[in-house]
Length: 240
Image 1 (cartoon, rainbow, N blue to C red):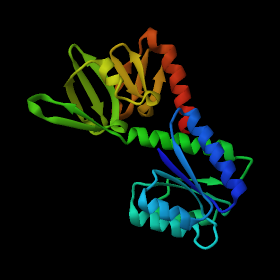
Image 2 (image 1 turned 120 degrees about the vertical axis):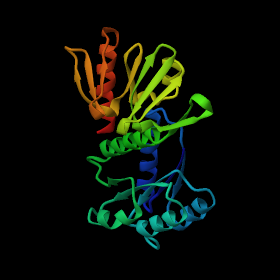
Image 3 (image 1 turned 90 degrees about the vertical axis):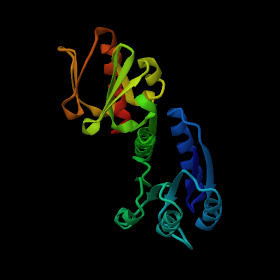
C-alpha cells in the first residue's frame, strides 16, 4: 500500500509518519510511506504515481489541504483522503472532497483516533474486494466481500448467503472459501459455517445461535463457541 503524509510542520510530520508506520505494523499491513513538507512536492509525485492513501493537513501555506484534495479528486476518486486538522470548523468545508475520515491534532486523543481510523480503513479496503466464483453452465458469480452474511457447507457444495436475499451455490469446500476471506472479519461458528462478523446482530450463547442480517441465523457448535466470542470482541474493538 502506497501512503503519503503531507504536513508543513516537520516535527509533526515526522511524528505522524512514525505513528502511522507503527499502527499499520500492528495491523500486519505492509506499506510504503513518503513524507512531504509542502503540497507542491506532493502533487508533483502524486500526479505521476497516485498514492493509495493520503494523510493531509488542511492548514498549509501556499496551497491548503482543501485545494490539494480538489486536485486529488480531479485525478481520481480512488485515492483515500484522511484530513489532519486543528480547526474543527474546516471539517464541514472538506465534505465536497469526500474524505474517508479526520484526525484532530490533539495529542491527548491522537493515538487513539489514529488507530481507530486505520482500523476502519482496513475494514473498508478488505470488505470492498470482489470475489469471483465459477457457477454451473460456465457462468461467473461475483460478490463483494462485505455483502456476504454467512457461508454454509452442504455436502460437496457451498451456499454463500448475501444481503438482499442473494444466494450463490458453488462447488467447493469450506476450507477453500475460508482462505479467500479476510481473516479479521469472518469467523467459524461450526465446522461447516462461516459468518461475517460485521453482519452479527446478536449472539445467543446459551442457545448456540448467531442472529444475522436479513433475519438469517447460524448455529454455534461447542467447539467454536470460545473462539467466536474472542474474535467478535476483537472485531468490535478494532472497528468502533
